[in-house]
Image 1: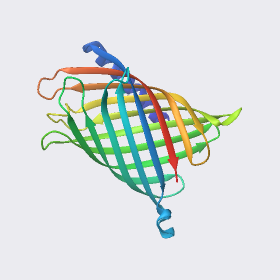
Image 2 (image 1 turned 45 degrees about the vertical axis):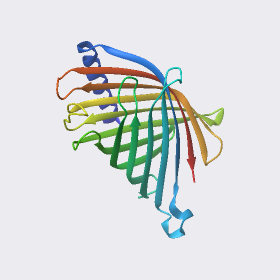
Image 3 (image 1 turned 135 degrees about the horizontal axis):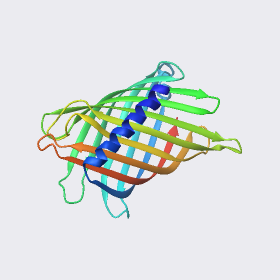
Length: 236
């Protein structure tokens, strides 16, 4: 846990250094997502340790007048224990920013998730390694690490404080995906409400900081999105 916190501090320091070298563009928007996850025992009892993950997102600009990006993610997994799960998945990411042509990115990835219950809340670690297929035949390799904390309130156990952070890193340089190095960081803080053991919602604020360095010109493009985020999680 201490190593993870130390890594986040280093990322914050590196982001601060980048801000001094390039102008930061800021905007607002909103993301909405739905995530469903469950055991494959609904197909056959012998597949109880098998898992399926289905997810969809829509992303909008500040006044909801422009949809600029979507995301569809699907994966199959295997429960190593009641805390650890391995995954293999696929993501489709269609994007149409204002003034730019439509692009479509597809990702293949393995992932590992570990859930750690504690006396003060639940900590979840998720590690993914994406192979991003974008423009041309170059494949960008991009690992990402998430740490999430959920703390139910004593006065109402269905209500929880939720925060998470996820950092992305570009392993290699591609013409379309930028130079190798730090890619982006997402941090979220908000509240969650559990309707029952199968349905939970989360609403809050997410800050997305992107640091893109062009492979051809070396120019740095810095963007910070201030986002409202709402999620629904279904477990089956």
